[in-house]
Length: 493
Image (cartoon, rainbow, N blue to C red; front, side, top):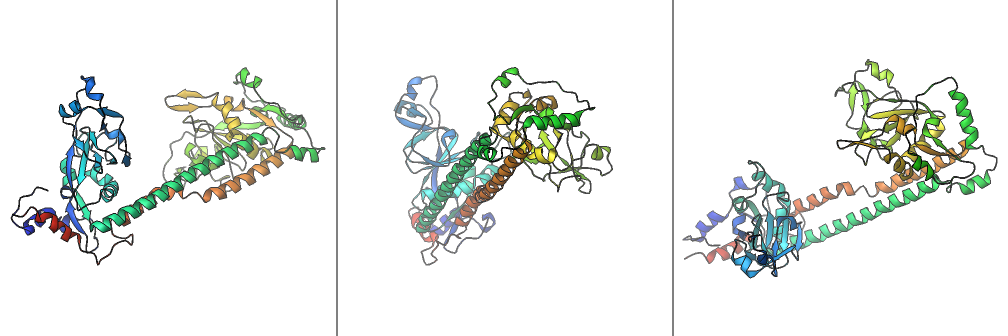
């Protein structure tokens, strides 16, 4: 600090933040100050790129992209002593706190774990004795949005050093800062550990699901069941029954499957048969393209965003008037399939079964295809599981047409999809097994849904920390203002 005032009272008036600048109440032994008075602030620069020798040194030189809300122990580039001298780059000591002032990483932070220089887009604070570096780091972590908001107004947000220096800063006693920083660090580390465990669990779910589905549609899951039920019908007998039902009906169908895919289909049990989805379809149609509205008294319209992971999510709905002609034309019945024909490459082809609570109460949009199968009460869940599996999706995605960021699979390509078909009895056995597994998996996933709340938990911890609500504060400790007075005493003449 270099303020040259006559008395401590005058210095305090300069340093302390008036009440109208304080955002919330803090414990009695904490104070509000301007950030200018807790650290010596500066920024760096960039040595000339024309002189390559400036970049062959051993001085770490940081850019904003290297600020990742953590301790920085190295840099992507190093500069020389000459590069440092011949530019506005400055060498900042270990334990300084760096903030990205503009660009894609605006507001990102880093604690220097090494002595390092920075480019001009970094503001660096060298903490004074009255503030703890980790406390300072975590405090600005909570204030990123507020800092960015103060920097708005130009073509893009730009946090200047002036904004940072004028920014409100909470100053507890130094021992309390240490305790808060240590407790926050400990809690956030536990949160990160929890996130990693959740990610590992999710990967385990995906791998296990893929393995089970692979066995299901190769007939391996029910191999023992077939041995115990030798009198079951075959897929051929079932297809014959469907063909009888199809007599007299005409459906437009043009095979759109590459012959090379058929050559790569795996071998099925002798009771099974590869068929096309078209062999099982009674009818299929695209949905309504009529303009929808937000009138909840109308008929809900299911859209592509309502199909998630093989289920229907009935949120963010749009509506059509109940008397609209498309409501009857594009009806939905229990065990119809809804297929997402247009979406991003990762989501196109997702399919869901219409359940009783949706049947005859909803209609659907034109980006979806309603598929109504013969024997749909038996086949719908089985076919849906298959289409959503890695086995079915791999074939479907080979038929995708890309259009300006969107992927498309039309009804003819969908109808061309090869389906591994067992007997009716085995379809029911496999479907029952897979449905039970999905229910078990859903219950297990509920235990890790905390992932969605982790960021909120993190913000809650940080918010409580800077309100004095972590249970670490000791009101018997000397107020931070006394420490501030000791530091300011050096400025009094």
